[in-house]
Length: 339
Ligand code: UD1
Image (cartoon, rainbow, N blue to C red; front, side):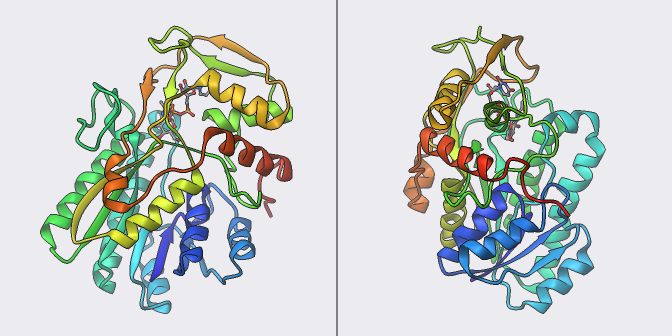
């Protein structure tokens, strides 16, 4: 298949591009490079030996994306990962989040319709569940419980739009993948996560502390109702996540489907820091502070549906993820070179 990857130069996109190419598919990428660098695409090419055409554009620019798709016809499927993803920023700039996340999706659906592309995989998030009523989370768990931030709402609204689009057009195959917490990096150390500014998420923050560019990790609360009092999450290696996209694409059937992509294993904040200390051989200063507003105590997947229907499971451990993240971090202490 030839696959258009929106946001293909980003953290999850670059790993997905490598996995697709290694599975025998062709990849073309559109990315506005607002959260990454063209160097990521050069490195996908280094890892795979394949040429990967890149269009630097905003996916809302329908004419540009349609032209790119026509130039590389036939394009068989789209994986849509372009979007804004910072929870805090989405509270400060809600309109921009709705504009970008919904606007890119709608523009893409129109381009797909015109070009006759019948298959779409969407990058959703476990954040759509909001505060879990029951754990582990299955695809049937209710969504939107106390979901207060615009970022999460955009993912939930997009899932509704995609479900409506698939219901109206029997030829369309649409899959939403609800990611749990992506961590790790490619084993080569050539591609990895390159957050803008000070990281919001736990592993990139811990890694910056290990390498010495940040002083200490603030652990957001140790009074949750969990075994060690800190938050439990389902950390999934980004290479496992990438493989989940390939499986979803290869199994996509007409209609609309949703899958959790997680390991099913709850890991606490303190567990993750300890695993990173082992992987890096560094001691990681940490301090307990107040809970972060909006955080849930625990969130982890029941990944059985993806195993049953896609034949996919997460194989890599939190130790693998820490080792690979640290390898990426030490090889690229300042992320990708920006030019
Ligand atoms: C966050 C987002 C979620 C998004 C996901 C992936 C929030 C509320 N949720 O999930 O919508 O899909 O990232 O980008 O932001 N922690 C610390 N200290 C830190 C950072 C985090 O103790 O400096 C703790 C958190 O309280 C949490 C765990 O580490 O228990 C994981 O946090 P994080 O990596 O930010 O992911 P989520 O909050 O699960």
